[in-house]
Amino acid sequence: MSDIKNIGFVGLGIMGKPMAKNLIKAEYNVTVHDRVRPAVDEVVAAGGSSVESSAAAAAGADAIITMLPDGPDSELVILGEGGVLEGAAPGSVIVDMSSIAPAFSQRIAAACEAKGVDFLDAPVSGGEPMAISGALAIMVGGKQAVFDRVAPMFEPLGASAVLCGDYGAGNTTKLANQIMVAVNIAGVSEALVLAKKAGLDPQKVFDAVKGGLAGSNVLNAKGPMMMAGNFAPGFRIGLHQKDLRNALLTATDLAVPLPITALIQQIVGSLVNQGKAQNDHSAIANFIEDMAGTTIAD
Image 1 (tube, helix red, strand yellow):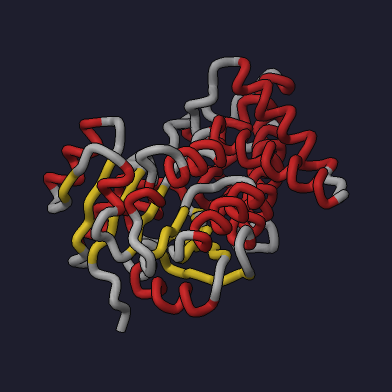
Image 2 (tube, rainbow, N blue to C red; image 1 turned 30 degrees about the horizontal axis):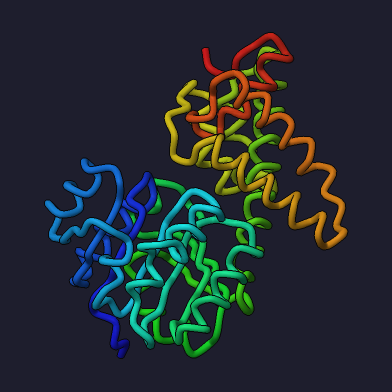
């Protein structure tokens, strides 16, 4: 049985807020910090408590979860003045569940080790719907003993949690995940635009292929959004742009060519320039629709 009972949680965005609420439902003592007061108030109403700094969220916590937009944010919130590491006690564990470049995770881990604080990088996949349902896929980097200690805490958050390797491995795995998702969304977009332009009903095409080799979770989740013209965010284009950028930077460091990822990054960048950064990443379809002069939705 894990000794983790008291959890600090920093970052109550579209993913962090439902994750914190699921930990409260699982009867953990959760103390939160975020600059956005309505999100804090919602978690407090669900049974959490709030403090005014990241260091205060870490004080007295067995584990501290951070859920932040990008690597510089994680580095600042964890290592900066008034940050998580300042308040964390030796023997506690910081679990950064942000999706960031693995080099940031490795630097943060080294600083944590120097203070006697354990660390895991543990980004997630599944978007807001699975954050709400507690069915995220959790990809973890760090030490086996620390993972084993924290594993029960992951149960209210995810359908799976896999230790992928040492520090940074979780975020490397997440970058691989984001490449696969982006390529899949782009393929679904092109296929449904082709079907619509040919005069077919995209819904019938979707029904015909979803049970075959082309079927995927991405098709099932994003195809209906494209057919409805509904691009309300479950995972924002702007965040996927960040993930693909981190993938390309990491690939450059490793001398790995990613030509298809680079192409989709250009597509995503075009959509951001059109003011669509806050749309769901299924709106990659908009780029293909604009080039074809048609829309998947009626």
